[in-house]
Image (tube, rainbow, N blue to C red):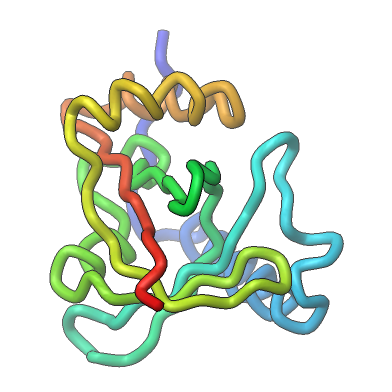
Amino acid sequence: MAPPKPTGPGLGHSFMTFMSALHVWLYRVLNGRFVSKMGNAPILLLTTTGHKSGQPRTVPVLYLETGNDYAIVGSYAGADKPPAWLTNLLKTPSAQIQAGARKMRVNATVASPQQKAELWPKLVAIYPDYQVYQSRTSREIPVVLLSSAA
């Protein structure tokens, strides 16, 4: 039996928004030290351009380094809608990341079905809840590749 789906904005959503902002602040202040992992999964900061506001939006996301690229997952904890950062990247694929102390401009592309098939088991290995999230939704959870824009 799958855990219940997230229900959207509410007290839990407000708390998670606060915790995300705190994590971003700590990550920047500490240059990624002490706050760049969640269990076995590394965390980077992703800064996108808001699709409505045009303003920079930064969120911490788990990632898998794949050669020169970074793979991230648009799971939104299994919600039926995608995370805002994914919507932002689909409109404006140019973004910035900070992985530890390393900062770089990137271009985002959604992984092809073949790329996702190769990456998904590796992503689930570092964060098993991705499989739970996929079971919560009929939406195909995408894998996004972030490639250096330099």
